[in-house]
Length: 317
Image: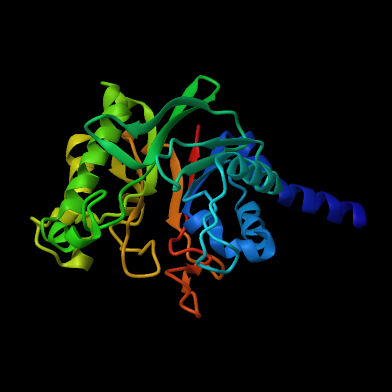
């Protein structure tokens, strides 16, 4: 009887991560974890890594991966790039990832990728003399057999005023929509450096994900904004000028699901048609752990565990 029970449990275990990988299915987890997972500092990130391990991801993309504050305070304490990588290598081992990659980051808000598989860094993107990508972006490749998956990560400018506008000029800058215009320039540059550099990208497997800090016209049934609003500029460019499809909108038949503690969908996963055909599921995760809760002491603008929700995608290579 005990032998039969053991065999049954073994078979059930194979239905999860091992069976999925044997079937060449990949689980991708994206999340803006707010200031290096500020919430996780109090328990050495145990709740965080336990939750991640339970999702059995093969690739994780973390926005805002660098620690910026003293534990449970709004006092600045920025870890170095070396400290950031060392911390993530330690955390990644807890949920079974061997490989860790840090994006280009002109400031202290990098994206970081952890993976079960080795990835190839195709391009780290921070801009040029004409266009700055304020939080950086990256383009990595995953090779699985004869298949190549292109992964683009990004995190655009977060403010309504323009980049590096002095404080006393920010109100006027907001009125001129300079934050929206700056984000649109960032997005155009990132796309031209990545997916638009491949003439036949619609036939290739590409995924672009991150905190876009901007909303889409596809959700305007919720927002009820004028079609001409500059707040749609970033996603108008993607939808009109690239081969990308808005995965969550497509999978959820247009159902609106906020990705933040408020009522805003600003985190996106875009995919090309070639990859869309291989996707089994995609969802914004709002569970007992990930649903954002405002810090009760109103410490700065912190939420628990983050002010954003994760996105989980399963696809087959």
